[in-house]
Image (cartoon, rainbow, N blue to C red; front, side, top):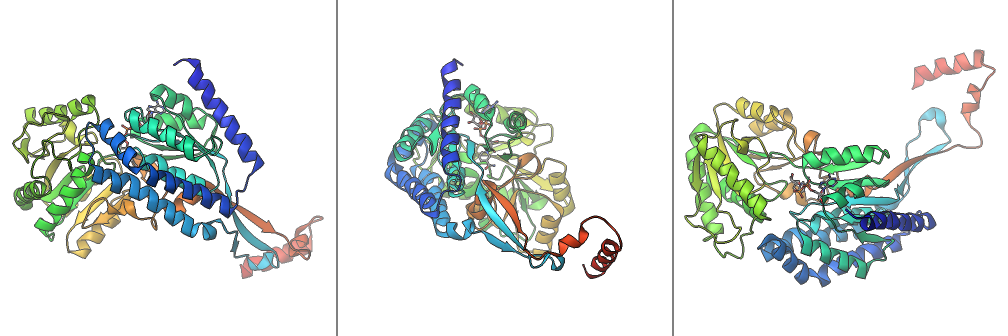
Length: 469
Ligand code: NAD
């Protein structure tokens, strides 16, 4: 890396920090204006953004771009605009009897300059959803999007510069080297979305400055099918969740755990559902391509490794697409030795693993890292509650896939190896705020009875407090 981008990073940070120092608590009107501009930017450039994403992917469904990258940002900003006044308000907190008549308050305060590192799979949403939360909380924002979506990243840099002053929000483009230099900056908060492996490096870089981090990572998210599940409905919903963005979704069901007797009928129902959603793969505008030749080769490698080790591969279509679209494939009879059962798949391959007892499915999940998402399908609510109680996951959707991610009224984030911290709605606002407790003492305060010289008064008072508190 030459020195210019490195110097620019420091320059932008200093410029943003100086602007923040001039205005440490932006007003409701200022913040709403920034969010409204983000909304306008999203609307005005919707077409160009969808085209840039499609060009970066080789092909990206315009409908999926509109839903998952653009609509999500617009509605996230709308939700923040609507609730911001309440989120920003200084809140009264209860005060214990022996501190009365003093009072407690909780004051949300912006942190300062926030860094956001985003991945390629939903390149606009995963950059702008954290950005809108950071702006709502009154921060300055620097974004480093992925180098794997160069057109989208360049367009984001251009439109952000058109709609925001550089000291409000700036996009810095560049490769992983720039990403490394970016994450070494002394931000007031660093928000990273990407792989668990890079998440570890980012956390270490941030630790040098004690910069707090939010890590939105990935992992192998299971879908458990209970014996009480409706197969046709389950297959329909799994097919959608798995093939949205051709499986390149952090919360895509990575693999399925199904009762042994249901594996075959589920596979058949899944193939039928996939064919209904995608009558063909080649040149199908609804079906997204794999982001790069390297990723395409990695997925082919997973299939080949599984096949050589004895898995049964069921392709949903007998086609050989001429581009980077990959035919959805179910994998049966997989084993733990196969790479497809070890790393996050992140593509349109779906292993169906048989289990004999529900306990075995739970044990399978608990033997691995804590996943970002968990899906459970069925009607037996006691079995559902058993799984919920005995497994960990960043979030859960019951009887469907993906949709817990779309909830602004719920926090979104991982646990363990799938991440730390959360955002969406008020949780995003709180992530990018210091919730500063303020204790306001009154003129007449009982606490003076604790002053030295210590003696009987102190002992009697402490004795009394122990009884009443
Ligand atoms: P990645 O970790 O390879 O890259 C993410 C970002 O980090 C990119 O902008 C990249 O330039 C930057 N980067 C790479 N190396 C770096 C380094 N050494 N220091 C600092 N920055 C560096 O991830 P990806 O391939 O872009 O995305 C796929 C992964 O992201 C999957 O694991 C997926 O599950 C995960 N993901 C998680 C979420 C979530 O919300 N939890 C959402 C989408 C994707």
